[in-house]
Image (tube, rainbow, N blue to C red; front, side, top):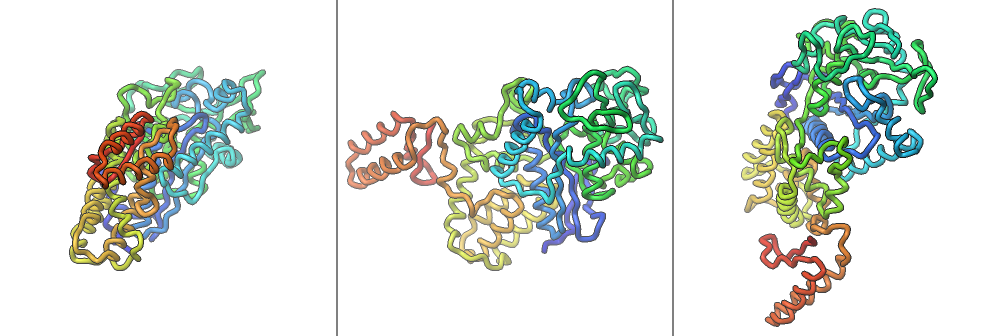
Length: 483
């Protein structure tokens, strides 16, 4: 076990780096806002889960017993995060002319496939929103007398009834949140729906009876109920994308304050979680990082273009989670090459049994690694330390194997479970098989060994005509790629 006390994390609520001090000795309880399963996640969405995975892996590495919960939102999330528009699930079901339950099941499975492809560990619990509707109604009933009011469209939370509303966002004005649209009957601009009534004469695919009439829970209510039910208030860490920091998480916090009868946010635990952590955006200059455009970058598109998904994970790790990260195909290709270099060395340790990582030559590198991940998950520096361990000479292979395994357990690059061949660029539109490529390359190698360069050139041109670059000058050795 490493020194668990040597971990500081940036708390979005206080805007400070803070030593991690668990609520329960030896445990770490983490809640991550999961997807609304009305469509496929884009790669910017998936950055949030790579970050949360590294956080969980770091806590495990530091010796904590980790309980990690990720929710699946299959009801209640409107097309505008700020209580405007229509339910995303209902809208997609109508557009696709399918059952809303089938829509939820399909996109949940697609999300889970991306989770697996990125080598993200399974959480202790996937909490499905529709499984918790009875608990949501009970939660709402408890807070309603002191904190809510009913209007024609539903039950609303009065943000003036809790202290420090909006502190997480640091964006409160006299007029309230600018992104929140007016709803007839609301007392304050920032008030938000706890329960949305089904309009008279309409019938939703997903609706439940409640004290306020048939309808569905508000999106913000879901996470408060599931995190409190599964982790207990207060729990240790709540994570999500930086977009949640402005509306969704402040509303969660207000609900948590109301439910726990707590006071102001000078005590972070009053928010329901001691630490709130947010990853920054992934940006793509063509604007294909928004589902509203109808065309967006999915992990599957990267795979279809021939890129192994761990190349994208590497790309995420190369930047600090709180930094904005720009996506480019060139950057993805460079990250894939970097990963390939690591795996080439790891393959040389394939038959070595891990021993004791405590080796004098490796000690400074391991110390750098521990310091990096302990200082708010600085994966960029941690990657460099891992590369230095892989490059170290005259080191007992069993010690090197142990050190690499320990580091990779935090970074999650699956260095010993992935081969160099797995990382070859091969678009799914290619009409030539790997077996055919290998056969031609074998004959070409033989020709070159025999100095029959005319035959070698003919075979190279044959490959090129079918979209294969033989990459004779590859510094990593004999390689090919499909373009």
